[in-house]
Image (cartoon, rainbow, N blue to C red; front, side, top):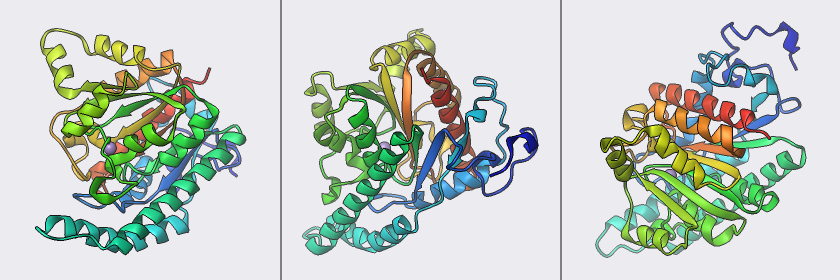
Length: 339
Ligand SMILES: [Mn+2]
């Protein structure tokens, strides 16, 4: 461990350490678990390299933050990548690609054994992330997850919801991710909140922001959820803005819909695709970086943030740069929202 007294926050950070910060798992309040996993990525692949792209770009981020000042002093670290997760991802990839290829053929049917194995690996991944998160919580730390595709935070949300029943999720995404076992994959990136709704009773509400690519069955699930899913569609946000509403007034409606305790689940494709050109399923529209900052700040002022996940960051240089900036704002909002 480096002594914090020797640390110059205005100097270029040391490569290999998230934001160049001098903290390890022993002294970091907020601990980020990288999950380089993309088994069920259905369109453009590469998000398993997201954590590394973010880590590399992160040393360029100035530590002093105009909104959250020197929040980093509470301690932030990125836990080293788990070799078992890398091995599972490597094993799952060709199996999942074979299953997906069968869906594009007219009379193709997926290999049941391959599908079963991908589902099993997804279950093992969830179990691992769940156990790691449970340990962090027991140790009084704040957990965060850096994906990987959007299936990866399931175990973390499960562990946090066990300790904080009644919590809500602020879900920022172009997609609702409410599909039932998309392409047969039980733990698909497109099914994460379907799985949360059905397997994690401690999550009282999911507030979805920026949604603009959604299936009819997903909308029916939202409408039939009796308020457990509250969507703020991108088109509705755009209409409100066009009619003269301020972004802040919309943000206040979003925050008002959230329970007192909140997990933030941020799919980078919720932002304008100019900010995430290498993400798996980009969709035009979405939040600007400034929109996101205003939203995160308002949440941090009015709610307790239990932790967060950031996922679907692509492997490219610009994807990593934006991912690192978004990660830093998430850390700032979370550490400033501890009540
Ligand atoms: Mn998503």
